[in-house]
Length: 133
Image (cartoon, rainbow, N blue to C red; front, side, top):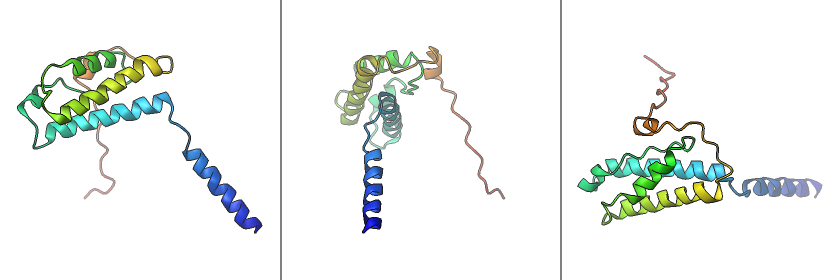
């Protein structure tokens, strides 16, 4: 009986630890990754409309102060209103912008303000395979 109580207490503690709400930083980070991935998928999808090709490039680095202007420009881009996926992506970008300028304003730290880094990102090199022939 004592073992069962200990196991129940341990499982309850584990569930409680996972139920903690995300921090502002973790929410902004996960939403920016989600937006970047959705944008890449939109560009490579077969349903990509010609207007999707004209959208501003959307690479988000939440540690770069210029990301705010990038989000603002993307949301305000006048084309592609008729493409549902683009409208959904713009709504996510609008949400991220709102979170960054209001809810998380004091929690975020910008490490750079290099706007060209968002236009031509230097992506980390791909790690070589462990098994090489």
